[in-house]
Image (cartoon, rainbow, N blue to C red; front, side, top):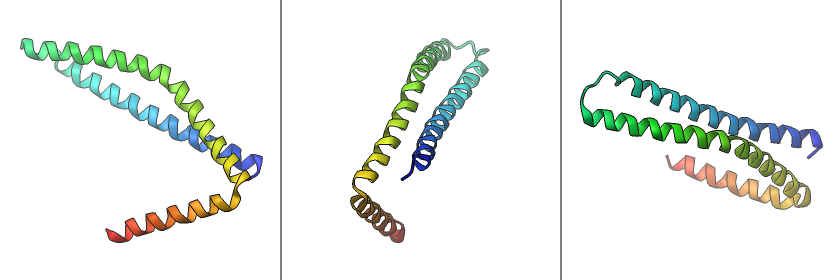
Length: 111
């Protein structure tokens, strides 16, 4: 692969990681909206569940913000590793791709 193809592969991996993080953030926002919708409930059980859920969401937000950069960096490293493997072992890469294609084809055919 050329350097340009490697760059495209890295960008695709980064885009996938960014999409995963944005979907998780949307899920968190939806959960917060659901919790806020139950704010008027007077039941103590619902109130305790609400407060626990809000604490969990706050912790998850903090975790995802620290995890976001690490996930993007790892995705780029994996893409670079795949590129290096293909450069060092082109025939093995072709064999692995053919084997995966055969396996996926067999799984699709069974359905």
